[in-house]
Length: 492
Image (cartoon, rainbow, N blue to C red):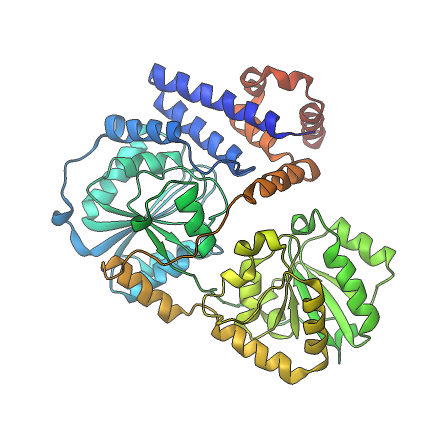
């Protein structure tokens, strides 16, 4: 069984590797070790910053890549660099890129990620939006870092916006070498650890929870933080393929989530069973990949024809236009999918644990004006759902209110423009107690034991057989040896 102590042992082994490489001057090895470390910590998120990692990145950036003496006054105000280390259409990159275009910025787009290439659809759009594009998908080298630094400085921009995951050590080192630029970071994952904190001047958080994590756990000064809620990008290129005949003339409730989002509780399935038993005019459609847990539930409860498994749907956006209600996953919710439902004025069924109120849907709908999007009390939720099922007018009215509570593209653009134009004061926020984060750590450990043991997967991917040298205890770890044996037979 994977425990927090075992994960900490892996942390320590990689950090020891980092210290050795820094001492020996193997800076590429150090950057690779930092990425491994960041990806490990992201699996558990028991810490939110690491000063030793920041110090190593700063040394590499300032002393190895080298700082180019420049003043911010020498840059052109309407030029900006968008430095993307994520490269997908499902994060926050497009929202910012489209806004920058509307705001009149000339954009240099740089993609850098050694693990994966840029999404083709995103690449096509950035080539249309941006004045210049550079793509880096190579193993790390100091020469590559200096090349990226030169691309940025040659463009003559006054600002750089960084869109990064937990890792991306080469990019962080480059940012440490650019103190003459105004550096902004988009934070798409406020719940997890990431590197490259001290090389950033301003942070874009999308909800109150993220502001609190930055202040309390990342030790970021209040004046560096801006609260900028995002809006869902809705695009559809596929026609609606229809629903099964069992859904015709029924109140259609849809759910869509990966299996891990239901781990740790059967409440979602118990609630579905009750609804279907008491409302004969309801069908529930489950959209998503194959899930043994969902299939078992349908078979054991004999709900064939009432709880329908649609599998993965390329026409997902069109599906959302043809449902009556959307059922959020539990105990881990689906924020972006819920926002998509709200965009199409579909009411949301959502429950959250009281201890996780700050991470509930109520905090990603910035203009809800008291509208309850997610409930912490099952009885109140059930009463409300019964009314929504029985009253089509109530569904329509609540759906409209939900859409009105979303961030809009035009308001997002204005807010971003105000920040970049230095027209904003430090953000307003509500202080919250983050002691519940320890409970989340326990959940992450449970997920490692119930699904892929990703901490072992990361170590083997980055170190191969040398993983044993990093942590000799693994020779006697049954879970690790079992995972290695499975990988061996998969390759066979």
